[in-house]
Amino acid sequence: MKKIVFTFLLMIACLHVMASKIKIYYFLATTCPISQKYTLEINRLNKVYASKDIEMMLVFPTVNSNKKDIQAFCTTYQITMPFMIDRNFALTKQLNAKITPEVFVVTDNKEILYHGAIDNWFYALGKNRMHITEHYLEDAIRAIFKKEQVVKEYVAAVGCFIR
Image: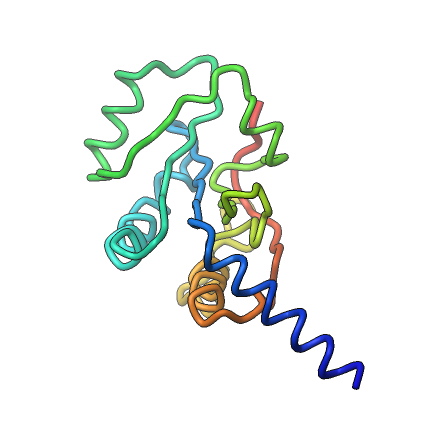
């Protein structure tokens, strides 16, 4: 009986999540080499999922970069999705972002469904795998679309510290 009630409550929670628009925030830094390297994957994910009911946004938590710097970054790495400069670190603090690149999957109700690494390409600063074996963000997106619970809700991101 407990299992049936739990399953029912989980289904209600999943339906509630799907009723909300999902937002994905990518925290990046123009000068972070790991942020730069992840632009190909960010572009790929944007192409695959942007047409779905997902809003994707780049967030640059910085007081040093200006709009021209970020536009140049987006041009260099062929990124076409919208971006915001979080100069006062309001969103950074709200979501508790610490690293670039770091990603957050959030509902309209501000519920964080997943946050952390995009995948397991980097496992330490300056150390990356030849082949990615875990796709944390994409797995979370797929689970949300299937109305399932996200299995890994957090995986530590590797990258540059937000200052």
